[in-house]
Image 1 (cartoon, rainbow, N blue to C red):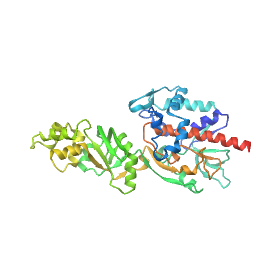
Image 2 (spheres, rainbow, N blue to C red):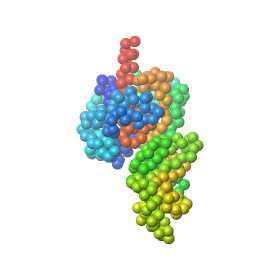
Image 3 (cartoon, rainbow, N blue to C red):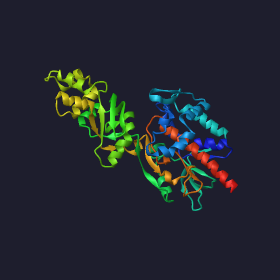
Image 4 (tube, rainbow, N blue to C red):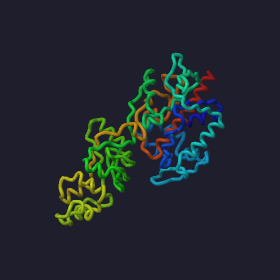
Length: 389
């Protein structure tokens, strides 16, 4: 849609083929609890949030910065504000008003949007094969942008089926994997039944990704939530390498290990562990239950160590269908600086189809917008080269 806006504004006729009955379903889902559209941190830092793809995505991000995202939203009548942790949201906290105005703009610019039209591949002559409610049609084109997403939330339209079609043409595609996902943990039956759904607030968590404050949720299968997602890539990668994989949690960030050990040692040794944790460490509910789940001794020093560095062993990521986003996709070596596939002239790609990932916090949407705009500009240059050759 971002590419359609840019191209139609330049006077080109654009048709959007949408597989689902309505457009932008994942965009609407992202706004269900508040549309985190971008992030307010300095751009020098923002552009480093994309891991191995930082340098590859930078030109597109420079062309459509978080500031540009806010200005674009404002041009559609959606004012934004900076919320907690520098995340940026529409003042309405919803995606639907922005989407309605955006669709109106696209219609005014002459963009045709055909829903229930699913791209299934290319014909023998290179035309697009589009499956409609009636039959499969063949569509000729001057240039095509594929923006088919990754493989998370497939019920919203992105199922990763496109990978098999492009691999037929020798396109190198990294396996799609879950990103910003939860993880399975082998909880005891008692802990699972008693505390599934409980939130751990005001904690810090450490992995290969670093040490971050925040909160997360105990699920029936393991752990999930924003703080877990911040560590998801590091945890997933360790699991894939077959390494011991632990998320280390500080349950009491405001207290030192020494202070905890002293306060716990003061408690009557005959007092129940629950009462010792409550009186000596200020822990109760799910935090105390986690310590009880993993404690092998009642020694005050050992309990203090556990509270400050509680190891949660994760055994596998949750399925990609449950993930917020996906990692993997088309190798950047397969595209040129205009986001066109080197092996398929006139075919451009953008968004989550490419091999990059980012944490939650507005990074995902911004990069999707940015690559869509960059690909549209690439299509414009493609047409210019054709007319001058």
